[in-house]
Length: 424
Ligand SMILES: [Zn+2]
Image 1: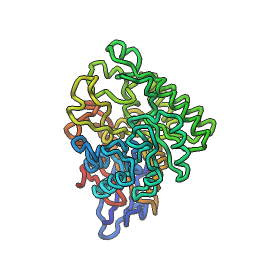
Image 2: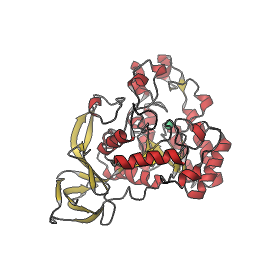
Image 3: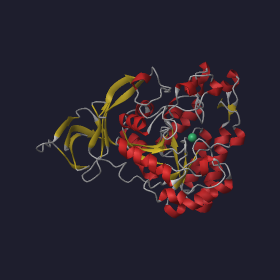
Image 4: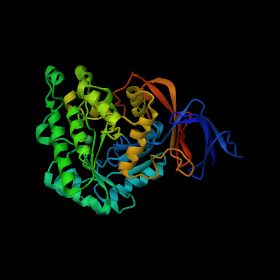
């Protein structure tokens, strides 16, 4: 199918037409009308490179009651994504070529976004011995990122070996930075709110200590390090210094750490329980500044669907995690305003580069793969959990009104979302 997207503003610029043919942007110009092309009226809409998520939990295999590759892919497409990186903390864990290939094939079968599996660093995420990283890297899934996310690779010797090992295939280790000895029993950010609520604290230093260590290790062995879900002002400062010294480190922040603080937990509603925890207004301010100045490269969702029984229970027993795929762009627009250049950089170009996804994160231009999203910047919508495509309902934004609406998403020139609805 050939499509003409009429009157879209690339990154907020002047309205143009885009011709999508054979999976690529074939032409950009004025009043394009080739015979047989399907017309998509994009008057007033912004066109962005399709969003890329570095940090998605799709829950399949193992917890198909919370999410599947297909339902998560649909949520992603509706959120404006054309590629997502799937975290390996499934059951079984994605620590072999077999499991990463299974997830990869499920993603291709769903066909709504490119699902790029992330491989586990250690066998069964146990932090004891390295998984078969090379076998995953050379599998059909072509894994280029490894993470024990959910767990920290706490053993410094193991972390060093992982960093050394991935150099051979220019892959990256994505660390969930949490010194486990400092967060035993932790329920909420260690601070005023946790004290008031009588909940055990998760201190900022537990994150910062690991980032310092890993930055030093990455510099020592000359490898690429990626830091997942940075949540504290202190972490930002460490990353800023590391980058200034030329360490090959990249970092992501979640939408919820940019918008929400630990004050939201005051009512003990476990929908606000997440790991790392929501922090303070000082932290959110530092994180926002870090996104603006590039100290933080990417906004990543940490989309973490959970079944009702795992979330609607007493705070201490609830699983940490929040939905994110369908609300990330509206939250980013709420926080940063209509800074389309910043949004494209942090939500598409940088994550595509970090994940090694060369077909994604590219501004629409002739010859570029047609992975695009069309956004209505004037729309404002109230988040209704019942409308989300995810199988789970644990969104912290329920009832909030947020700006922006994804009208259409194209994956290799074919729509996955049209008129705000998934095509399948
Ligand atoms: Zn994590």
